[in-house]
Amino acid sequence: MTQNASADLNKKRRARSHALAQAVVDAFVERLKEEVDKQGGYLTQAHVQNLNTEFQTKADQLSVVFAQALEDSAREQEELHWHAIKRPAFDRLIVKRFEHLFVRRDADGTVHGNLSRRMLPGFFLALNMMLGPQLLSKFQTRCDAAVDRVMKGKMPVDWDRVDHDPDVHDIILDAQYAITLHFEETARRYDWLIHIVNTHLAPVADGSTNARAWELTPRVLHDLLDGLLVDIKKAVVDDVAWRHLAGRHKDADRHLIATILDRLQ
Image 1 (cartoon, helix red, strand yellow):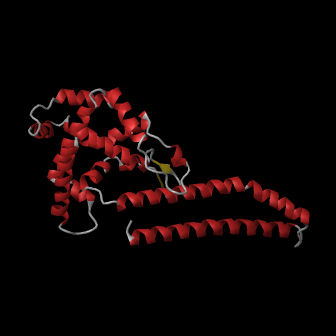
Image 2 (spheres, rainbow, N blue to C red):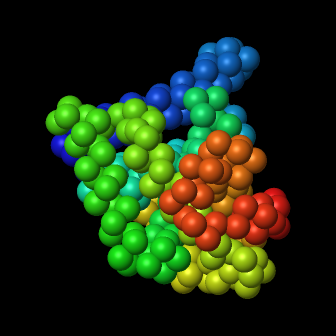
Image 3 (cartoon, helix red, strand yellow):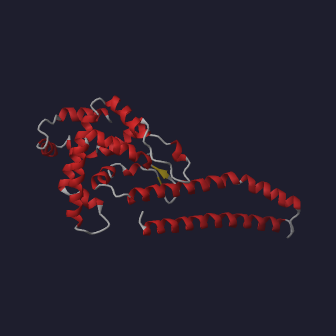
């Protein structure tokens, strides 16, 4: 994590904590004022006890709000940690295909996504096994070179811009082609990938509670693969794109790839 990113996160946490504390204090003060006015300016011990009982009933509601704040903070920490790790460009570009699935909370409090970043260690292990160390290393080297070529030393990296590089497009498509073939025995490979991910989950971030129970399920894996293989799904129904791919893979079987992708739907 960079110093600036860490400072921004701490500033955001302090602002969120202050807002929560202020909201609680304001609510209690307003309720006290209402009760004082209603009782002619004086509160007896009985009135105070009644207010205490009322406030206690709100504790469960407040605990939900605070728990959500802790979950948000933990997710932000995980996201910053992922972006701070110096991973090969290829890895980032692959994850870019399904990063929209990662759990996040909008400004209005609505939670989206069903994928935890805890799955990344297991995913990368499986990716290494599906592509093989030599091919994976080749893809990583070529994508790193593409970043240097596209960005020309400018930071931060514009991953959308890199993603539109023709060589990067071919690399990602070749990787997805290899991954698709790995799922020819679909049910068996589903079980295999779920096992790899769930037995290599990253540690739960401090303050996180719901994340402890998260695991990869067939339903979530379906969504993950739907995003991961987005480019090959387009290529298999596009004559020009398929000819371009087949030019690099002389034994490519378009019907087989289409059949496997249909099974993954």
